[in-house]
Image (cartoon, rainbow, N blue to C red; front, side, top):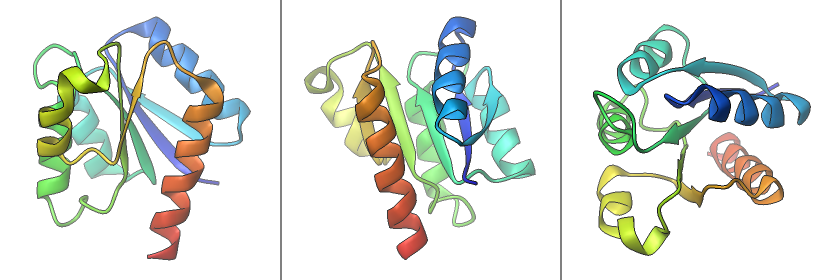
Length: 125
């Protein structure tokens, strides 16, 4: 069973994403901000990370940059979630190293499809 870390400062979003992923058969853990997300990854690396963008302290883009800059964690796929349209954040998406970008409200079939796709690509590598 793949382990997914959800990083989001909004309790409702964390609950919703965790419930979707748990029902799909994933083991889910959560973090409330970028700093605790980085700490959770260091303690027990997940197979994939769902990352909110707007969070207090370190935002999702900076957290993703830090993960992708670290040789020990750069292989972990990151799906970034945001209420912003992709076109508004295109430069930051590329610069941070996000593996996928999905907008809120969450399209559940798209979220699960992208999750499975990225997990398969990591397993194949």
